[in-house]
Image 1 (spheres, rainbow, N blue to C red):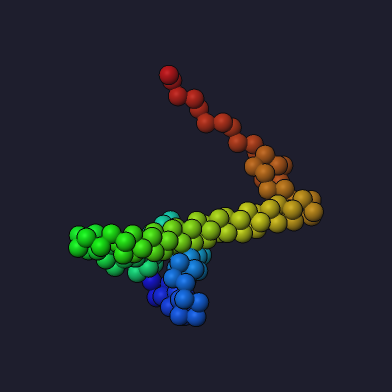
Image 2: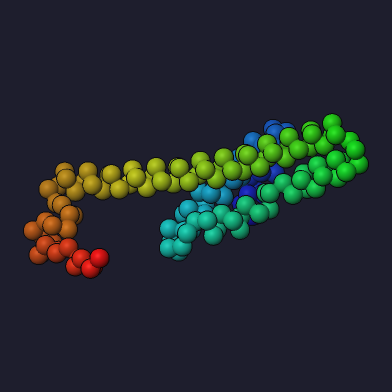
Length: 142
């Protein structure tokens, strides 16, 4: 949460765009969560949920409903649109960070595989350097 606000607050002040700041903050939270998840061997969603809660536009949702209740439909629609933009930016930031983390992981795996092929070493479970072949698991009766 602190990382999200450390990214969002200066960007929102500098650019005046809350959705852009929320997108950057959610991306930072997502990437940090993916890193911590790998290090702790836990799902990234555990850390993303905790980090993203302070960014959720709860006040915007409240003020939208309050303005509708007071009968100010135009102001309520403007607030609802801003709230949806912020929520969409947060969702997009999480999605982009997840995709980046997987892309980086796939590149690392591909680089390792390329290195293994270049040196003539193979890490397949059926290679002679690993010993005997593994037999398939026994089939279960129907």
